[in-house]
Image (cartoon, rainbow, N blue to C red):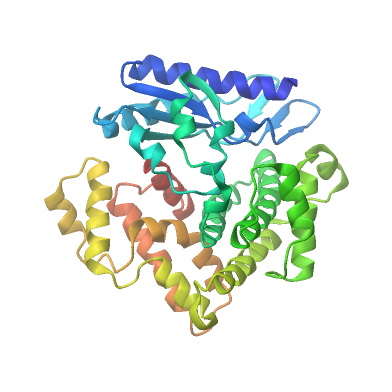
Length: 373
């Protein structure tokens, strides 16, 4: 195990122990690390003074069914917030915040097959047994092609926050995240084409022979991003990192192409597709979702119904996920820009009414999204 991976593994262990210390072990079935902390594919850059680690600590905390999951989630999130206040360990700086989700045991079995969930069989168990990990979906062929859109939407939400940092570390992190965004667009293309694999080598081969969902020059950028991620040190030194604006543009183009490829965009109308992804017009369903979201923040149902008046006709969860992409798509103006701007305006009202009023809109969206895990 190399020193950077050892540092990440030690931090994941420390966070798991901090959670156990605050919550207790009685109701926790398992804690395991997914993502790069499990795969060992750590994104880091040595500045000469210290190592900047861009990979996050991705933990799953699984609790027993019926043990008060929401209360435990609140306590876990408090632990994570305090833990992330200290990210500089001297020689290493953890740039990304920790990403911790709290799930009931039955939720793991019911996870939607997605790239992140079907690869959990390679997770690193930090507490408890491995039975829960084995219960997660693990068939990559069961991922529905439209899940490719979900992946791009989430990455764009994260990119919007990262891009707002203006310090030197933040700029390097944004450059890395632009690279990650391009690479994950490649993952999305494989999902859309039902060719995703948990094996990096198999993904590499699949990308090399990928179809024509996107333009050849975009495919070249994606393949280059996958290669650069394997050696960030050289990519930074060579100045070959993609710029953020180009990465965002690639992601939007790919989203539109995938929406058409998967027939999510009927008759090729991708703006209608974005609105449908936000369940525009499904007023009763969206109202129930809003009340449920505010309840998770500790608000009563009656006050939530009052707060819902005039909020708008979008799905709160879906609009949160779509807002960064819709904001980018509306920049060009034109007659359809207003339709997309309305999604962003809805999200602005939504975050404030759910108690997330601090920071930029991108930060509020990210903070509210994290609270829902």
